[in-house]
Length: 221
Image 1 (cartoon, rainbow, N blue to C red):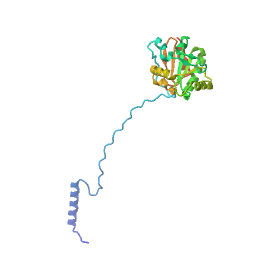
Image 2 (cartoon, one colour):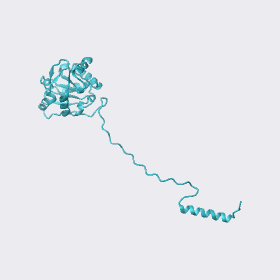
Image 3 (cartoon, helix red, strand yellow):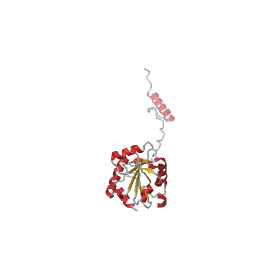
Image 4 (cartoon, rainbow, N blue to C red):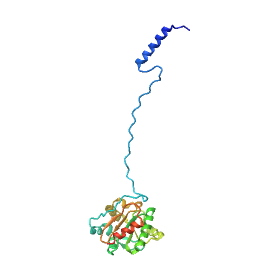
């Protein structure tokens, strides 16, 4: 090995340090990583409207959609002929109102468990206020369901209401008056009409026995 004079060695080290300073990096440090791009800010997704389920309490959706009581009594859904699946007899909602009692109108489907529970509560409410205090009309709005299926459903559960198949024209008339949600059975929509033509669409979601009882009392005239 060749011995390097101390003075020469110091000169070589000094030169190496000078070169490192000029290049912007220390020879003793590893290569510096590339500068990372700034992190993008988090984006809050737009709020998605939540459909009303039977287990939730919806905002109050009560409304009187008809301009006057007379307009309600002449509405297509009120004057359309329906057929009671238990008796095969025709009837109209307007005709029921002419008898001087309010009408509870519920749209449903045979497969809808929310509807079944709602019908049980309405029948209980009518037992409380008196079965003759209001007419109860239940309309099947699923196009796949017919009068025979609906009659079996009614008998199976021992219901007393007037069950009928809405049909396309009545379903369209209801949607035009109350909005498409009235044809969504799991939302358990209920419309209460007074003999004078006052119309109330209840908030979507389950109605308690007390709710129905109060609505019948409010719509007696």
